[in-house]
Length: 145
Image: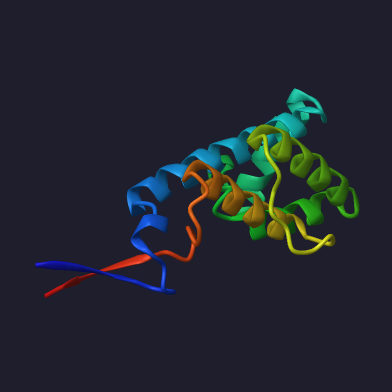
């Protein structure tokens, strides 16, 4: 018999199915990649392609890995662009905000790019799950009885 243990005292009606959460996260990753693509295109198509090449060869970050390697992506952008990376990060955050289409729940006005992306992902998943409370904290652990 399988038993699901809910952590953080969440109620069943508040919890999304773990597979549903994965779908929302994959959707968000696609939206994030689109936002990155669109804003890097502002540098020009050939510059964008050169940047992706440099990220992959110099920093071991493939385009599709950016959502999972956000910290490494930010670090690489700072090494490549210096202070100019902040401007690109802001453009990407604005585009991401437009693409998800609703307010991102933030706790600070001085978020880093990484913190903003995490807050946007959380807000996106919460919204897609119908506003269920404690979505990200409602992890199920499957145990065999």
